[in-house]
Amino acid sequence: MRFWDGNKSGASTAHPSALVEPWRTRIKWSSGHIPNTRVVSHVPGWTIFDNLFVLNGTVFVVTDFPSSIPARLTITSTAVDIFNDKDAVNSRTPGDREMRVISTDQAQKLFGSSAELIDGVTWLVNDPPQFITHYYHWSAELFFGFWRTYSSLDTTIDEMGKSVLPALRRIFFVHADADHWRDYALMNQWVLRSAFPSLTTEFFYDWEDRAAMGRPMMLDRVIFTDRAAAMQGHHFLSTGRTASEPSALPGSAHWWSTIRANVIRVCGLDSKIVGDMAQTPVITYISRQEWGRRMLIQEDHERLVQELYKLRDMYGYEVNVVSMDKLSRREQFALAARTTIMMGVHGNGLTSLVWMRPSPRATVMEFFFPGGFARDYEYTTRALGMVHYGFWGDEYFTSPETPEQAYPQGFQGTNIPIDGAVVARLCHERLLLR
Image 1: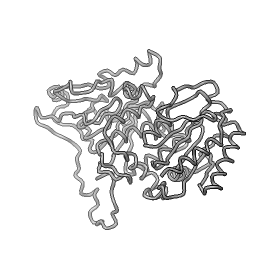
Image 2 (image 1 turned 30 degrees about the vertical axis):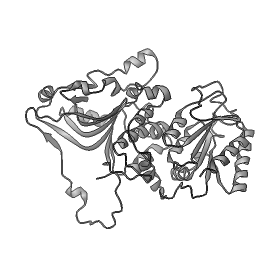
Image 3 (image 1 turned 180 degrees about the vertical axis):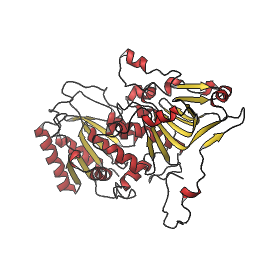
């Protein structure tokens, strides 16, 4: 079944697809004809394989041309928690327990003449739960990078997100249990279940169950992701974002539209209309004034709100001043999907920018303590084809003139300055674009 399935209102209900789909549970081969593993696509940390084998928890790449396989260090790791000291870095280096590249003769001896078949498309997440349980690191990094990788196989995705890609069937969280992929705000599961309603998930104990059977299994197609392996890439070294590596792959300018359309559709919104430039521009200020850290100077916050309301009264823009944690999940997704300009102090609430509709006006404005800068939301904004501005009080900057990443004293504090009049003036300039 294709990922994008159109209106089925005229379809017959006499023969549901589940009843006519072939039941493929095992693959057999004669001597010397074992299926070879194929690397469909690869950048560090993000690899698409066909015919990938697993036995006793070890991944096997079967090929008589080992030089065609990317370096193991750029595919997988030991999946330990990621820290930056030398010993920690060395501890991530994979060995034969994690992955082996073997010949067809070796595979014949090891696997025999058959394997259990895991059919369809699988996403294998070889990350520890260290970062998975955070809304930004899930939706704007891990899931973001996964879809950028997989969508590279369909460069025809249009603005409404229509794609010919087969739907993702399952995820293997090899090192996480069922409680350690959800985030505290419950956003991760909403994103996943709305993007892929039929998807199933397996976890650490399921992976162990399969290993304990002592039978080889072959995955039809797998998107193999590994955070530590992605850190070997030069795009990561320049951005600090593991999801930046797949940007080197081919892809549609509308690659993310498939996910956005499904997520906001669950909120009852029509992706063809929501966020369109013909609609009244929407400015959303995500406030952190009750969080206790990374907050604006209170007087600056109040002045910013006043300046935004002046824009509303003078030009008819819709202005929303919100604390995301006070909104339901549905309200958060719906508001972000309608937003033209999103702004706020650096923080998790800005993750909602991924549900904005890219357009010449679509803008993210991020407030930092002067001298501080983080690339999290700046990179994500640009990857979606939108414009990001960072602010230091009354100064602002945008790519390619961004500063080096820095976290000075005051970055996490409650005295971050902002000039509301400057912000409002830039908002109006952006909204005049056609």
